[in-house]
Amino acid sequence: MSGAREELERLVNEIPDDQVPVVLADVRRHLRSVHDRPWPPKFFGIASGDGTAVGARADELLAEGFGQYK
Image 1 (tube, rainbow, N blue to C red):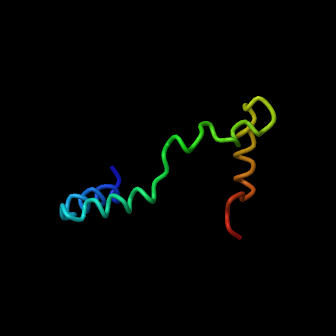
Image 2 (image 1 turned 120 degrees about the vertical axis):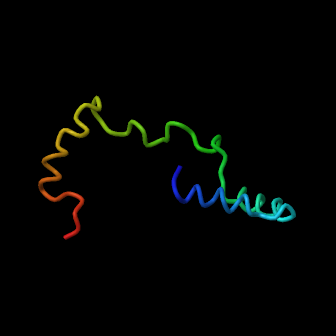
């Protein structure tokens, strides 16, 4: 469990009982149902080819500085 998740669990356990419904309603506003997120996402499979060459040039691109701020 991550430190942030552990802190969240600790804080939840400290919520006074009379405030639980209010906090629960607030948390629910920030969540989306898993059913609202189709799987796989629409962008899966948009690359051409058979998928074997996706990382074939990784070493070459990284050696050229790909992903580094200049």
